[in-house]
Image (cartoon, rainbow, N blue to C red; front, side, top):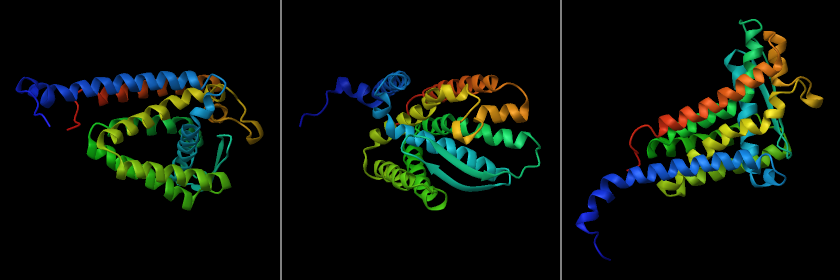
Length: 251
């Protein structure tokens, strides 16, 4: 095996990480755009189905965990094969109407916030690996504690095992890309539910999350839907900007 030329050593030691960084950002932006388009075309849901289930898990966990943080109860989580989900919780808040509104908002904001955390964790391999392990383990733990639908009892632990497998067995570059890709998918998934954000009804479940916010905070549901859509886009852009602001730490 030939040794690299001395003239190429600076490129291999100093400039190469920067090249990898730019290529990674380009592909991630392309993946985000492709995802947003695939959500809108027939058949696109089948390609992105695993990410739909994960985004639903983030959404419903957002409701349940916020209820817990406010002193309430997170009773169970149901996820169904059509990509929908229901979190059953009880609210006990000293914040008056703000408490239930926060729980309602935590669902739609769950995926972009989780996505931003994943993207930011990708700034170092140590953090990326740890974050993948935490995500995979929490998927398994949530199955034991909260998941109570037959589909969820199969799909959620399967996703957890796949993510743990990436964290434990995949090369470092694959772990970095995987966590960034999952983060982007989580953020972009908000735009898959635009119809829901701008709807007052959740079908047989009653009021949508934005309609519940209208109920407690008075401003119309479409205002809250628009605000959360804009916030999700800002969160995605800012998390990518922070992740790529400095030199790549993948060494």
